[in-house]
Structure formats: structure tokens, C-alpha cells
Length: 190
Image 1 (cartoon, helix red, strand yellow):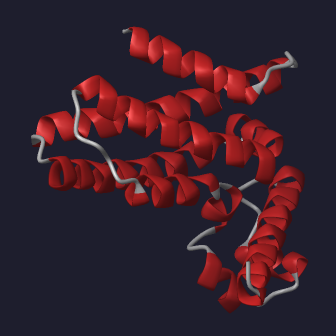
Image 2 (cartoon, one colour; image 1 turned 90 degrees about the horizontal axis):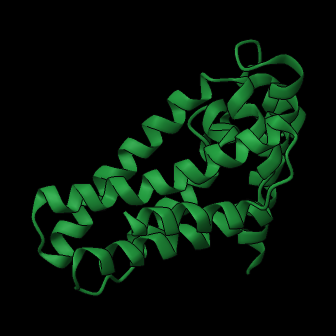
């Protein structure tokens, strides 16, 4: 990773930590982008170069899932095989989120600040549409089948997050990667 990429990664991390700190202390409604920028030691203009909103700064994982799914070279196969390829990418991204992002803090915030789920839903909706287009184009499968595969893959990712968040709120120890595996296994069993 070059110097520019290191600086970008450091700035993204500073913004996310500042956002989470303020959201935990003040809540979503009263936290402003100006406060986040000041806490991260950047200008508001710099904040908006990295994130479109305070909500997206708190929820950076969708960006990585989107990038990974859209970069995936899919191999034609039956529906289950395509779905398994998509789930593998989601699984890998989920593991990165657990390791590199403030996973537990974000999980608790999603429960405490339900308004954040609106942002999650918008991000997911955009991702589903992009992934559907990719599946249709790359694999030459119909629109309905493409949409169904995209929805299922993204739903698995969301259900794993929500399930883990509930264990955090309940105080029950849980391994997020194990939870994702259970979600994927149950989904494929259907």
C-alpha cells in the first residue's frame, strides 16, 4: 500500500471513529458533520470527500461489499452455484468488517439508533440494483433470477449483521463469523 492509500485509510478510520464516538455520546440526531470533522481533525469539505453523510461514515462496510461484489468474476452455473459465489464474497467482506471496523460498536448503534437502518436499507437497495445488473449482463440470466440472487446475497449479509447485533444487545457472547456461517447454511438449506 502506497503513502496515498495509507493516508486515505487513516483518514477514513479517523472519521469513522469520530463519528462513532459522537453518535454514542450524543445520538444520531444531535451529532453534526461539523462536530465529526472537528473531532477527526479535518474540514467538513474533507469529510464530504470521503463520505456523503454522517450515517455512511458510521456504516462503512457496505462500500467494501459493493466493491467486492461488483469486481467478482462470476462463473456461470445453476442458481445455487451463483448464489454460493455471491455468499463467499459476502462472507469474506463480513470477516474484514469484523476485523477492521468497529464492528461491535456499529452493531450496538444499529439497535440503539434505528434511523441508521434507513441508511442501511438505501445502501442495500443501491447495491442490489447494481448487482442485479451485473448478474444479468455477465451471466446472461433473466432479470427476475438476477434480482432474486442479488436480494438473497445481500439479505444474508444483513441478517448476519442483525443477528450479531442482537447478541451484543442481549449480552450473549457470539462469534460474528460463526453467525454468518449459520445464516449461509440455513439459506442454502432452503
